[in-house]
Image (cartoon, rainbow, N blue to C red):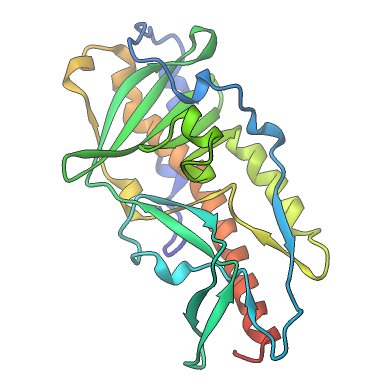
Length: 267
């Protein structure tokens, strides 16, 4: 699932919830990293900033470097603000500097491996390891209720609570969506009300690539866990939720980029 191609046919995804009802869940041995943190992203503030127009001639400000994505061949990317300016080639072929660039940090995968995970309050969930060339790159934790995906966390391999608190790793190395559908709704409302002279910075969202669609493998050590039978369905439902956020964040980023090119006479 990617901002670059069509959504999957959600109607063709089998009914996850009917299969989950009454399914026994064995207590997993792996604790959740995301659920052990005192971080609640339900009330996360969407990011805006004022456009820096104090230059003559005008300079690009906070362009989102979507061109640095490796096409669609990645699993997901989070975005971070850089302090230093960076060169950008504009639609008219001119190379200029972009102040305060927003740049993607890409996670690639050639395998997705499932195992159970234990969340806060003993809630059982699903962990999906994103592996590339035999090395863990990140993992995604998904917790579901009887009717919906109610929490998804994307955790980069470099993330630890201490590292992020100390500023040693990117803030986006840990992204958590408590109710992805609610996050999408808030983002839609937020984007419709961004004041003039400001712009949306997609640093609380993610972009998905095609590798997020890889088939899910079950860790052999947990093959007998009853939750293994729905691992693929849970992943696909979580992907549909994240895809909606990804597409909206991607469209808003493109709109900001085009606005900046027009403002600077570079379109």
